Amino acid sequence: MSTTQSERLRALLEPVVSKKGLDLEEVEVTPAGKRRVLRVVVDSDDGVQLDTCAELSRTLSETLDDADTMGGSPYVLEVTSPGADRPLTEQRHYRRAIGRLVKANLAESAGGGEVTARVTGVDDEGIDLEVPGVKGRKPTARRLAFDEIAKARVEIEFNRKAAEKRAQFGSAAADGEGKEEA
Image 1 (tube, one colour):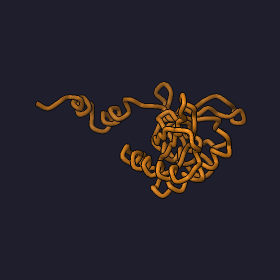
Image 2: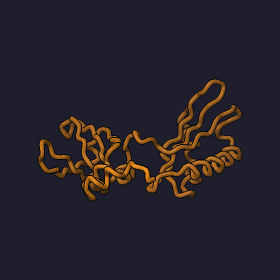
Image 3: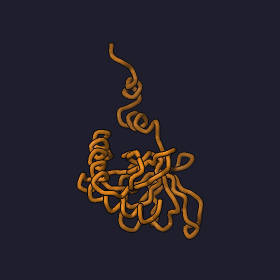
Image 4: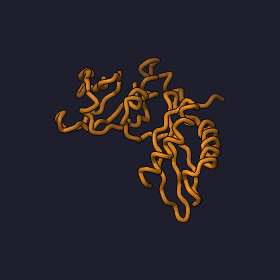
């Protein structure tokens, strides 16, 4: 897809997406046989529900039909939210990840390597992290400027809620959570 088509699509779709209270994260056109797939990725601080994607898809379809940005060849419109493994690239992505565990690859200017820690705060310059303690040590605080982060992603935690519940209410409450009532 040419840069000019990408820019035209973004300029056309961004106001419609913003009007719905969402952020336009990505616009991508890829070939798929005789058709093309126009993937529009949206997000918000509260996440994106399936009904919101369906409603937005109808609205964007009408907008695209009224404009000739996609040309005359057939395409499939796909409106989606970012996946759990999407890269964190903008301040708002880190803000939405507060409380979550992230893995960040550090830039060479920051010494390289990687750090896995929980995001505790975000501001205009960077992020505050809580790095888990090793071998029974207490967690430590760490600050990373955005320019010290080469790339970062949220780490999926399958047992976090159960572990938090056990810590908060004791193991008896957590043990009964998966049992059905008779």
